[in-house]
Structure formats: structure tokens, C-alpha cells
Image 1 (cartoon, rainbow, N blue to C red):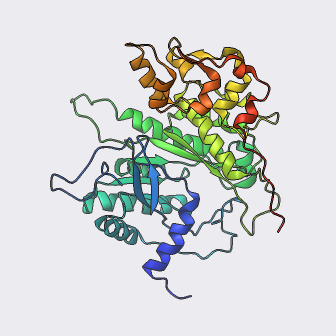
Image 2 (image 1 turned 60 degrees about the vertical axis):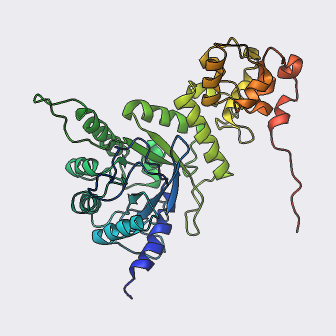
Image 3 (image 1 turned 30 degrees about the horizontal axis):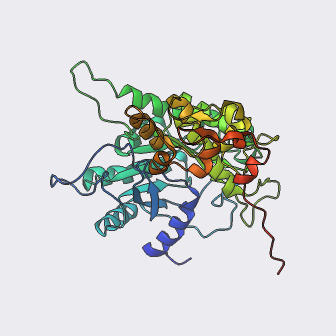
Length: 412
């Protein structure tokens, strides 16, 4: 077997990393090299693109350390039984790539994951070594996200949190039975134990010691997780309930949903719910409602389909509004913040502008337009000084106004 060049390894391992959902550096410790010490920055503006909550696009070098793996997870293209071209970076090669890409202004940070080689501890030790070399020997102050390995020794995960901005541990699938069936070498109990240890490490470092000094920060951007959607047949209700428990129990920054699509040599036993990318998008929208709009899981899923899945034709907020028409139309000039957030087409920023403006004057229809509200969606559900939907809210065909129109398929 011929020895692969660094460029060939990069081509293989960056492509292999496309199945890992990456996150942005929002929430990371504010570091930069403007004081002349070290190189890199975690706060600058934006080879993978990620978006921060404030809308900034940043660039990360997203790679696997290796796509060799001793595990045989049925849904994973890099599993041991999969016939894919394999490659492996040495820790020093990852460090070199990160620094050279940063110096060329290609990236602002590193997103590093890996298959399991030799053992979880050996793999995790190499990943920690990469982060440590970047921070301590090269003064790298950019963003680092490590996908940690739950079976690794706790001291390795603890050390990883001292050098990385964010840690993530994949829960893999929404249910324990799904993990046991399709990833038999992985233990869902151990996965949750590792996530709890990360949370406890972060909590323990918030308080000052008896001397008044703060301990070193641990994963200042918190932890996230990734869940494969559509590989085990779990419906959206199950998925969102699992996500809600993870947010509550481990104070995660984000759950990432990764739509499963069969790979050429995958097992025929794996189910597929179509279309996977639309479903993934609806789950992200529902997740956003859970975290920022005051909805609970049952409210969202009760507005979906009879099989416990979200409506693929319309977004979950609109689906809830259509099912709960008795609470509409909402008087925009009188409703509280919680109710304003439930109006389709009106987001958090628009709600903030509404609350600020109506302290001084009564709002009209054109005011909402200038505030950026999506009035095409909102108009059946709101009333203003110069607008009332009359019978539009309760019309029998209201859903048809928003659902995509059927299209004639091409026969040839």
C-alpha cells in the first residue's frame, strides 16, 4: 500500500467528517492575539462554514483524525466493515494543517473528530495532544471543538476540556434500544455518564477557590451532542422528548440532528423516513421552539401527524397555530411577550421591536412590515389598529395557503 501524502489524507478525512454536525464558536472564551502573544482568534469574523446565533458565518477546519474504526455501527460509513479508503493523521500533521490554514486566513478554528483506533483511550489521548500542542506550544487562540469519546478515561476528557472551547459527546440515536441494536459496541449508559462528567467539571470550575482564585476554565462554550435521525425508526415525538431531557439534564448548548441516508453497502434492515433533509430541518425548527419560544414537546408534536412525526409541509409553529385557532387572532398591541412569540411569521427580534415601540404608540400593519415580520404567514393570526383578519383565521382552506402546491412529476 502506497504512503498517502498530507494532501491525500486531507481529501479523505475532510470528506469523512461531513457526517459530523459542526457548531460555531459562539459562547467560547474571548481570546485573540492582538496583544502580540500567540496567533489566532476566537472572536474574529469568518473548510466548513458554521453560523453563530448573531448571524455571523465563520470557517472551521473540520476533519477526522482518522477514519479507521474498531466499531461496527450499522449507520456509520466509517465502520470497521465498510469498504472505504482509510487514512490517518499524526497529531503533528493536524497541528500543522490548522496553523497553516489559519495563516492563510482560510479558517478561524478547528473541529476535530475521529474514528476509534486501538482503544478509546489511545484515540482520546491523541486528540488531547493535538489541542494541547496548539494551545501551549504554538499559542493558538482560535476556536477548538473536540468530539470526545465517552468510553475514554475521565482524566482524558477532563484534560480535553482545559484546551478545547467546546466538547461534544454523541448520543448516537434517540433511544437506548436503537443504540444497542445498531451500535452494539456502544453503551448508552456510559455515554450519559460521560456527558454528566463534562457538566459536573464545568460546574465545579465556576466558583472561586478558598484563596479567591478561579480555576482554569473548562470547555467555556459548553457541550453539545449529535443524534442520528431516521436510522432506527424513532418518530419525531421520541426524538424531541429525548432532546428535551438532554437539555434539562446536561445543560447542553445544542443538539444536532443528522439525517440518515443509506450508504451503498448499508444493511437493508435500516429503515428510512423520507425525505430525510426536510425532516431534519423540521426538527431543528421544533428544537428552536423548545429552547427560545416557550413551547413544550407535547404542544409541538400534538400538532403533527397521527404517527407522531412533524408535518413536513409546514413548519411546526404554523402547525401549532392552525391547530389552536381558538387563541387567534392576537391583538399585537395588547398581547404579552409569550403570546407574541407564538404568532407564525413573527420572530424574537420582531417581538422585541414590537414591545419597545408600543410603549410609545399604537402599532399598525405597516409597522410590522418595517420590523421584518413575515406578514404572509402572520396576517391570518393578528389584529392591529388598521387590520383584522375577520373570518380568515377560521377559514377551512387556510392550511392550503401555506402548504406547498402539488407539482407534476417529469416522466422522462
